[in-house]
Image 1 (cartoon, one colour):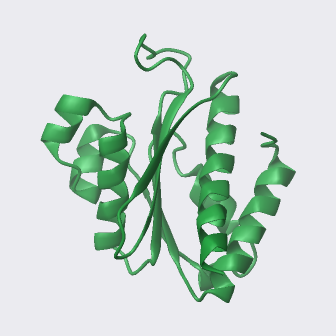
Image 2 (image 1 turned 30 degrees about the vertical axis):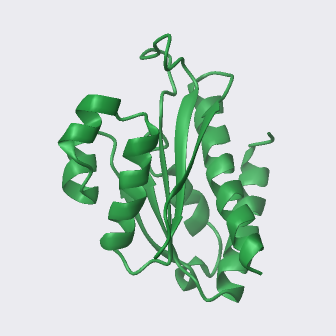
Length: 167
């Protein structure tokens, strides 16, 4: 997956065009990317027409207080899990006027990996208001920056795919 600056800018522009056509807005709930998805989105001229807001919830406490992720979810499944990202998108939709929410939580490295959740593991969730979250797990190769870049790209691509199904 190509994830250089030019590719990310192009993806964000395509996403913006699609959201604008559908008169929809998006909120991003980010952990391992630290606001990078929102940064790429807001680099697009005119993004105020489709970008609602971003939540950078790096710590578990932030996930709980800003997005309503349940403490029990974090204890039982961990921050890097399908359950957590699904609660992140639900919380982002509850706390915004967005039509769509995208959440990411992962292990970018260089430390923190386990046999069950190796370095490069990232969970994604995409959720449209009124629907259930769709979650996916990806394992990316590379250093911390490469994992984070690929995460940004996959988050944007995933939403583009879902929006294309609605057109």
